[in-house]
Image (cartoon, rainbow, N blue to C red; front, top):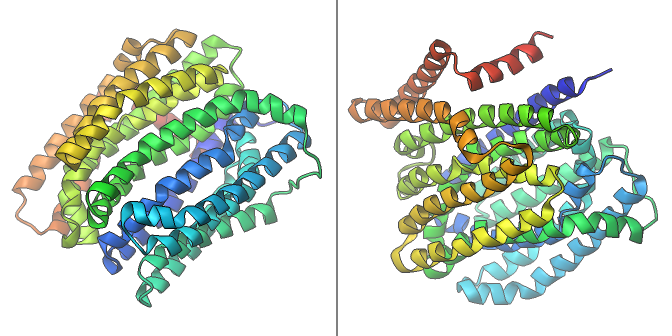
Length: 480
């Protein structure tokens, strides 16, 4: 019989493979498209993103997390949530469809009318997909999701590149997203055996919504916060400036949010099964935080150090304004997994009410950052985001730590060795790049190899605990 530890390690490995391959393919395709399309065309998609993201929050409504946390879910539970997702997805598609002219006027971009009306179809497609993904996640089964996401990424990427070559411009980005969602949904339904019953249970809905609605409001607030910067830049600057920012943000998200996606979707169902055993919960939670933050700090600090040769080599000189945005955003992104893990613990403890209160407080504190962006520009706004993310970490870790006796200072002591390793590596790599007499591609290669060698050498010599934990996971998995 498969143990929880074996399921966790297998889940982590398949989640890593899924995220790495899917996002890696997406990243490569994004580089190709960045060389074929204009920054302003990426900016137009960025303007639509906030409305898609807000609508998606309503469609999910926290039901996914509620189903994962519930120990015994019935087909009646799944079917009830499925029909809710579908109804809300269709509703919000039509809301976006008829709101398209207003969105176009707000940004003063006539093209947005057609773009919004067509791209809104992803809301309906996603509403078909949520329960299928939730069931697989609850089972800690990421092998099938990996297979499907890789197929969807490759095919949709080919669609986008082909359309871009044929001169479809911004529409190549739209149809790439639609095709990716559609293919993903199609294969989930084809290969996952679950089918909805013709039933909608008011009892199931009430039970799940009592936990999920707080996550809905929290997710909505967080989505507004994360996307409000796109709204501000698109409104007060230009589509081109938004294109530079979104491209830098995509580079930042590649390590930061992918790491959290890998760890978060595995750790949440696993930790939820330990919620009654506080000792085991804390012990495993500490290991997850240490390992996650070692990888995050190294990748984010390393990316900041190689930002210039990386952007110029991969997407070209026209994207140079993205460099400074990326370097600053790396200091924002390195805290993201830590925030998410601490908030995950609140969900494990069933405290979605506290989750909501924290989100409201943190987003109120973000208002000055938005004002700074309007008054002083994009760089000043990102600097404000760096300060805000430190304050948010204090709030998250204080409350989550109280439930399992893992206070913020203990967390900081646990992750500080990894931070020192990462910042030391990044400083050396930046100096190496400054003095190298080569072009950008050669400089980037030398910096990456040097940085990786430094991290492994120092971690081995110092016997860094987080490094040994990650090494042990790989050993257990591959020794089979």
